[in-house]
Length: 233
Image 1 (spheres, rainbow, N blue to C red):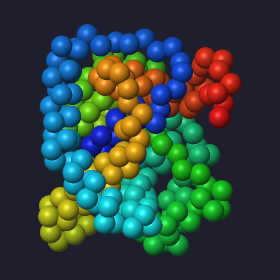
Image 2: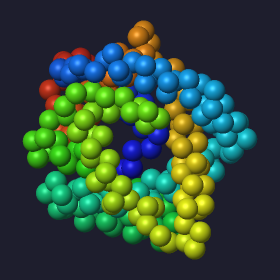
Image 3: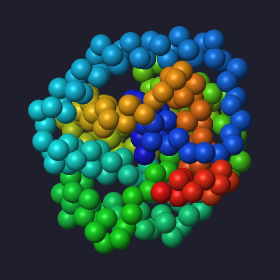
């Protein structure tokens, strides 16, 4: 799925899995100032807007908006399933996309889930990883947050797959800008509760958790993990 602003932060917060991943961060002296800049933009611009959106928008409307953007960019998942050789899942996710686009009213409702068609998360960065491309050094992108050299380059591949980047409207730029703004606000609002999990050195926490989660996603959760009964829950 498309890497929205702060999507890397979501990986870091929700994906703190216990597995051994080598931290490759030779650019830390550059990454930390960029991370600080991103935090400043978030603190004074994005977070206040997201808090306002969260306070005035009913939960079911927020769910619909989130579902809509997830479905809109779902062709990224479908395409990368096929690129990774997961043909069965590729057809399954194609069916999921078609059901939600029609019976789910342009994806506002996740109807496919009720048919047992679970949502997957694949992107071109994962595809490169599946075919043996290492993640490379950890990098922090201005505005976009945690990433790696591989994932940063792969963003270009996902951009051309993303249907929202193609012209469907007469006033494409204005419509695209409004949709992007709403997508960013919706994504940031989803992180308001999850960000409370961050502890200690925020930069190190985000870096380590992001790299761990991305490695886990490339391996489809088949990575070796620490034998901890609490992780099973």
